Image (cartoon, protein in one colour):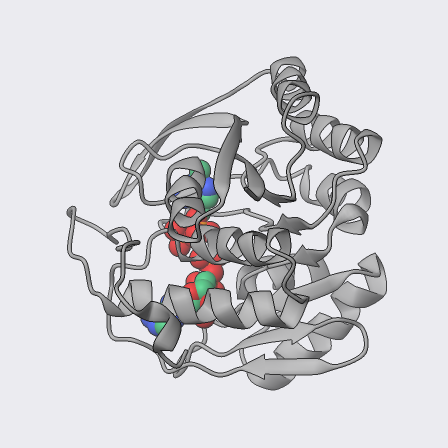
Amino acid sequence: MKTVLSIAGTDPTGGAGIQTDLKTFEAFGVYGMAVITVVCAQNTTGVFGMQPVSAELVGKQIDCVFDDIFPDAVKVGMLYDAEIIHTVAERLKAYHAKNIVLDPVMMSSSGTALLHHDAAKVLQEELFPLCTLVTPNLHEAAAVCSHNITNREDMEQAACEIVGKTGGAVLVKGGHLADCADDLLFDGTEMHWLPAPRIDNPNTHGTGCTLSSAIACGLAQGMSLIGSVKRAKRYLTACIDFKLALGHGSGPLQHRIANWENRHA
Ligand SMILES: Nc1ncnc2c1ncn2[C@@H]1O[C@H](COP(=O)(O)OP(=O)(O)O)[C@@H](O)[C@H]1O
Ligand SMILES: Cc1ncc(COP(=O)(O)OP(=O)(O)O)c(N)n1
């Protein structure tokens, strides 16, 4: 049995964070584990409160996992502050964790900051270099590169800049592009565009969490990086296209989809 660990925050309505990560792990048939970094009071309409877990307890949770069931891949999501980032980076390094996929969560779609303003630098300096893949959306990539990213040309430039800083691979997600949902994978050698039509669906809460978790599953299962990303994108597109309608805001995704493997992204 392949095992995947998510280190992330929570969403009691199940749309984002740990809850959606575990649903994704289940859909891919891997054994899912979870270390909680911050408890969030959030739903489809917004974020109403956050209580970080102490960095010490985050570290102990990670020890409990790695000392007992060593994960084949790790997905890292919301980390909240510099102290938690530092602890997570220190532990992942000490355990020689493999196949680390980082979704550098900074802001909710409703506009709430999910990362302290002084922590983005620590994230880049301490965690990015440990990762197999970093998956910023356009806003997160812009924060890392310090310039706006609004089109495919900007995305290619940002991908080069981010790989130049980290040495690992980057997936710049195009979910916030105006007319399509094309993502760009750059591994330092080749650029791979993953084209996808923009699906007319306001319910896209947790798309970034789902995508990064699905990629981690592929890596855990021994797939190549490009193979894992393409399969994850196909799965995510099917989840969005199901058009589940729950809640009063930007709703969550459906995770149990029949025959999604046979669909084009
Ligand atoms: N309306 C949509 N139609 C199709 N794919 C989408 C749509 N919205 C987002 N995606 C895809 O969901 C994934 C997450 O994208 P994005 O929204 O950019 O990240 P985040 O959730 O981190 O803000 C990407 O693969 C993106 O292309
Ligand atoms: C606990 C937690 N983690 C991450 C997010 C953000 O989710 P993401 O899939 O990156 O994007 P949106 O749902 O904001 O479009 C979150 N809200 N909570």
